[in-house]
Image (cartoon, rainbow, N blue to C red; front, side, top):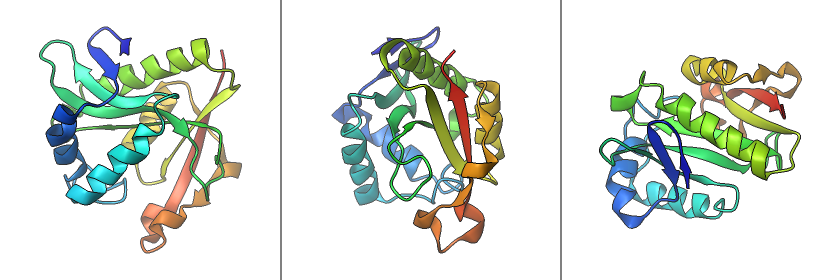
Length: 173
């Protein structure tokens, strides 16, 4: 568990499912992340992310009221991407909480944890080129775009705009 000024970053529990499923089922919130997920796809996402527990990928809970506002953390870079096996950070915050700074606060919490607890020289992030909000967050975190690692994401081969992906990197301080 990580505590930031306003957030608790922790593994998900069964009671988090309604909030997470609502977030992942939101077509607008998921537009740049592959589209809304049905209940089965949400359950599969939770199961996949449970395997990342040693790296730390989990729920973002607001300290003030215990509400789940997102899912942020570290994981191994996915196969068929230029960051396969490298340390990746990813995030999603539910749409009602956009603009609150929660994604940045949670991502920074995980980056601080990574520098203190992991040996990797860098952390990477990928997103669709069109995902301007995530790209801005990457830059605010101090990440830099690595154009040589941009790619067409095979998971989105049916949507060329979504498949057009960018890679960012932040080096150990």
